[in-house]
Image (tube, rainbow, N blue to C red; front, side):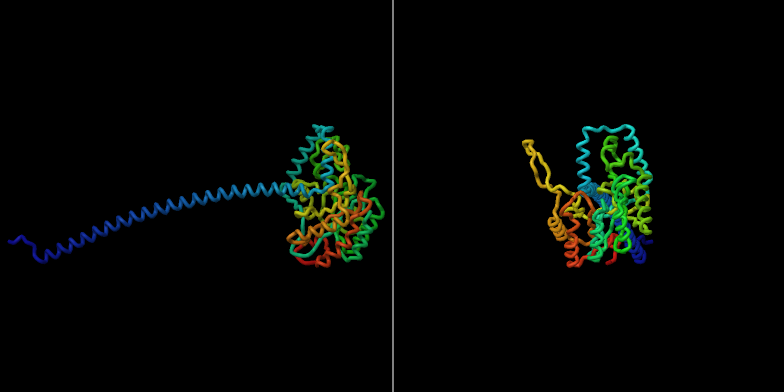
Length: 396
């Protein structure tokens, strides 16, 4: 019997052999595919980790940069707030510095100050006050605002309102910490406030009853300073007293005009802090009105600076008379306002200007530049409106 395979068996062997080769190829391919998939997955995971690490590093650097920018902006804001304080406030600080060597903190008073500040923080934790420096920059509108001061220039302003067909905002205060005298005890002032209220062209805001420096009245720990300096409250200025300061002005105005005071307020001397703003917000006064400012300077016009010349010590210790750098004549003020408008990218759109109706200046009073200023601005297309109108989103 022959042991050689038949042709049929050879064909079967060849087929089996080919199948074995194909199976081996498929096995090797599958092995390579698994290896490729593993390497690809490993590479993907590695790339993902690398990308995530890079992204996290980028986020960390971005956060650090943002924190730095925020701190820088906060510092700039503090500096801006300081630059916005009125010249009167700066004069007060110089006066207090002169007293520094003669006064010592009072232990009991310091404790009261600390407790009051903690209470103000607690009560205003959920409220946020705004310090408004400018209105809507989209419209050619200007807000002329006036602090009552002594009120002696109320008749002049009243005539300007009628003659030039303008609207203004007037912040009311008794000006002195007294119950028997002050701006609200002058008959002429009361008469003109009533007249202005009837015109519909004057909006009234709150300038506090006693005209205290709030920042110093909240923080001062020297009993002597509180007794000597008439712009400081004699006791620590707490929230009930702040409420009373606002309410007395509201009640006096309502009794006089049968109208309600607008919920805008301006603290004397621009002396404020975010804590004081937040405390007032808890009393329903959210919007504190400052005045506008740009690189040319502040629109707190220096009508209360009365001394044209000052003494200055020379390097040899001798006194010499120099021009007061803060004093501006009427012409100088008009030039300043013109330059302010030209230098600002928005011109005077939304500008808030501050003036005072009476003060120590007895000649070259700045209120007398208003007709010229008003007409110049009108020729440029500006309108003089109330604070409510300059702050809204429509053209009034």
